[in-house]
Each structure stands twice: as structure tokens, then as C-alpha cells.
Image 1 (spheres, rainbow, N blue to C red):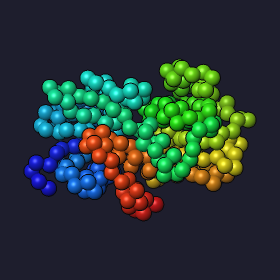
Image 2 (spheres, rainbow, N blue to C red; image 1 turned 135 degrees about the vertical axis):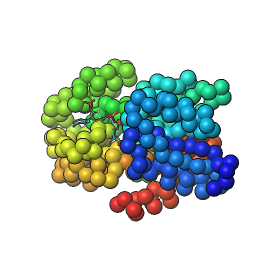
Image 3 (cartoon, rainbow, N blue to C red; image 1 turned 120 degrees about the horizontal axis):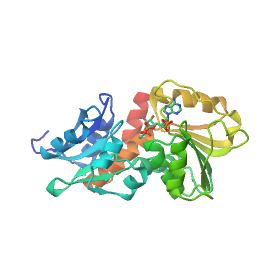
Image 4 (cartoon, rainbow, N blue to C red; image 1 turned 90 degrees about the horizontal axis):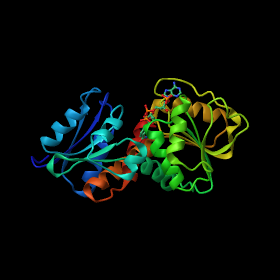
Length: 277
Ligand code: NDP
């Protein structure tokens, strides 16, 4: 790697197992771009100082994951519409004069994966979104932009679901339900944007939510997607998708934002899929 390689990094806590360095290095290799992409583990409370130090030392861009996405949004001087809608940022760019720009590619990465890789036309769909955290917010807006007919949001803390629906402000299309108030409803698409699977929890949802053609999508992947997949399979879905494709697509959107060139995501996705199952 040349000494002049441009520096990028992903910040999180924990971060050791992040796939972002491998994904960004693979994109860069495809396009002949020299870059160094690091993982930086910072605990909450030290995030902003660590990012500012990284940028002051020559870092050009930072990806941000749990638990720092809201802090990333808060520290920015400029914010894209996608970041503003999510109230969170997964992509920071160093601007001249020490300023920082915030962007969010979670929603666009999700939609690109589900519509392009999995060829699902979301227009006219009735969608159920589980969760109202940072990723859920980005996905909610992206689902509506992609043309779903209705979006129902449920969350363990119902006030957060209500706040998201209020922020969207389309009561005829987007509304909330209580987690235990879904009996009798059914959906074309059920998206898990909670971290239940990471914590080893199970999904207490009616099996009758799904129809024959319904798709279930878990933003998580690997072992963290097992419990939602278990519910979805028991409920009869023939179309289960996990978040590995979203991970690659949101990275590609961040890469394009920084470098102005779009990588081919498929070889990178296939390599990771073969390894992770
Ligand atoms: P947040 O911490 O912001 O949100 C977590 C969400 O999960 C909240 O809605 C929370 O509800 C809910 N939740 C957590 N524990 C439980 C529980 N035991 N029972 C019910 N609900 C629960 O996380 P993010 O939004 O950033 O991430 C959510 C998931 O999406 C993670 O698994 C993450 O890995 C994945 N993700 C995947 C990406 C990809 O590229 N594939 C990108 C971004 C995220 P409450 O509000 O009540 O706390």
C-alpha cells in the first residue's frame, strides 16, 4: 500500500468483526483506487473526539455503526436529507476547514438490495416494519419512497414508533400498531429492523401475518438473523432475505458518495455469501 493511500475508517463499539474494511478494499481494488480502511473502536462519549482526530490526521471519510450513528449526526455541520430523515448518520465526510458532512445510506442500501438483487417491486405492497431505531427510521422512509401502499410500524417502545410515524406525516399511508395488536392483519412484506436477534431473543408474532407470496427481510445477517428466520419459516414464508446484501449496498452507496464511482457489488456479495452462508 502506498504511503499516499487515502485514509478511511469505520467507527463502532465493538467493531473488530466489521466486514466494512474488506468490502471497501474490494471495491477500491476493482476500480484501481488506493485507500487504507481501518477499524476504530471507540466507546460512547469518545466518538466525536476520535473522529475529529482521525480527520485532523488526514482521514477523508468515516463509516459509523452501533452505537454512534446518532452522535455522528449530531456532530455534523452539513446533513443530507437521508441523514436528516433518519436522525442518524452512517457516513461522515471531512470537509475543508474542519467541517463534517453527514449522510445515511442504510435506506438506499436496503431498497437497492431488495428491489435490484432480489427483484421485488415494492410498489403497492403493504409492509410491516418491526423496530423504530436508527436503521428502522432510514428503512421506513425508503420503503415509502419506493412506493409501498401502506407502512405499519410496531416497536417495543410504542412512543418511538408513534414519533417516527408523526415525523413521516402521512397518516393515510403510515401508521402504528402495538406489538400485540397485529392479530388479523396480513402483509406482503415484513421487515425486521430490531436488534432482537443479536440479543438471542425470539419473535412473538402471529403466524397469520404472512400470505403465500409474502417476503420476510431481516436487516441482520449471520447468527443474528436466525431467530427471525425461525419465526418466518414457521409462519410459512418462501422468501426470506437477510441483511448481507443491504450491508454491501449501503457500503457501495457510501463508496460512491466519497469516490464518485459505483463499484460492482455482486462479486463482493457472492464472496461474503459463500463464506457466511
Ligand atoms: P437501534 O439500537 O437504533 O434500534 C434497536 C431496535 O430494536 C429498537 O427498535 C428497539 O426497540 C428494538 N429492540 C431491541 N431489543 C429488543 C427486544 N428485546 N425486544 C423488542 N425490540 C427490541 O439499532 P439499529 O436500528 O441501528 O439496528 C437494528 C438492527 O439492524 C441491528 O440488528 C443491526 O445490526 C441491523 N442493521 C443492519 C444493517 C445492514 O447493513 N445489514 C445496517 C444497519 C443496521 P426500543 O425502541 O423499544 O428500544
